[in-house]
Image (tube, rainbow, N blue to C red; front, side):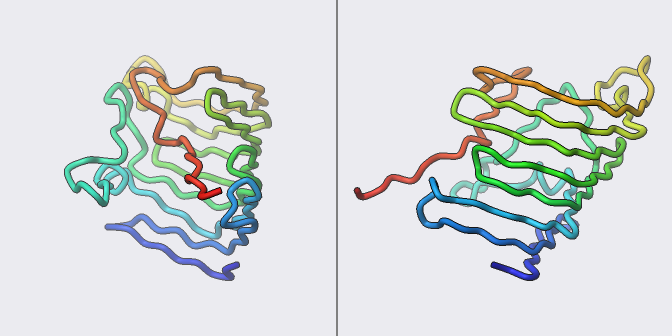
Amino acid sequence: VSDKFVMRYQSGTYFVASFEIFGLPITENLFFDFDIQKMNVKLADVINLSNPLDNNAKIFVLPTEYNYPEKADFRGKIVGRPENFSIVGESYTTLGNFYPNLELFYDSTRIKIIGSFELENFQLGIFLKDTTIGKFSMIDTIDLEIENFTKYAGYNLSIIHISEPTRPY
């Protein structure tokens, strides 16, 4: 339990939240409730994040087909378990704003996302590197299931895999 947890990284990435985590050390019992007051992520900080065991190995290698927001701010709640959690909040980026109200279900081969979201003034053309597309806003619902999702557009998504620790029993 933390009433105010603050974490900073590099030139402008920070995370301020209150949270409760239950069920540790047995991950099958893990439940979390994060109330994120402020989170700011700078793209340069994400790109430069290195593996602590090998400073030459980058943790995130982003596909070059896209332009990414230079920064993103988020505030909201993330509640649930690693394999089933909800996200409700507000995200403001340099490419537009995103307001999620989503539930995510995850296992080793499948991800399912259901809920609603709003995009506001999202600059899709800049993101896709396509000058024929402008910005748009939309409110919609989503019910999406992706099977065998370890690769997408040449990008290995295995970095989000949650591995279970080896237990002595």
